[in-house]
Image 1 (cartoon, one colour):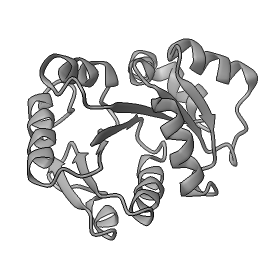
Image 2 (spheres, rainbow, N blue to C red):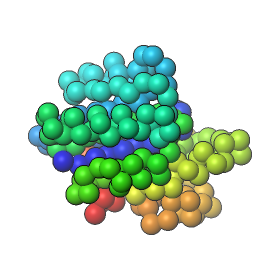
Image 3 (cartoon, one colour):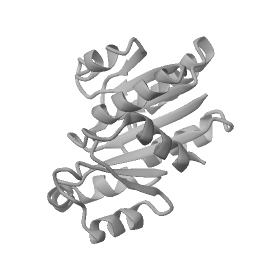
Image 4 (cartoon, rainbow, N blue to C red):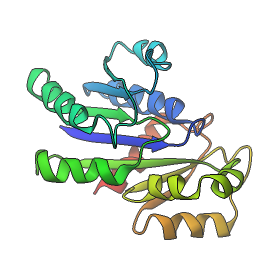
Length: 196
């Protein structure tokens, strides 16, 4: 089993990317479970993700990284024990950061569980968002093994932006894409390369 964790600010394209990735996983015969974190009482994306027939475990009550991270670990362990899918895909709320999640699994999780962390950035809004939410956006990139720079069909990222991503997520694969246009198989392949 592998754990694939997506973080990213609201509107960065997480749901579109996740849908493409899980469709590619299931098309090649792999089993997938999804853990979705939402701040409110109703999972906004649950209906969209449920179209695939994949098990969805919503986590409510706030940011996974600070309020209910124990529940994330419990949910992961329960899914592994009950259905042991090939993949567990975690969609974090737009306010979550990767570093605390990574620390949680390092301390209390299965040490042999491969974890791929993906930060998704909206190239068309990065500059504006970075001015008003610098610490949050920086923390979302820390610990990422892959940074998906999305919406390049709207705004082509400058070399300076790509350099900034590389500095904020040292060692991460930087993947400029247009989620609306990229083939899910290609995207999944590029993400898996970042895992190994």
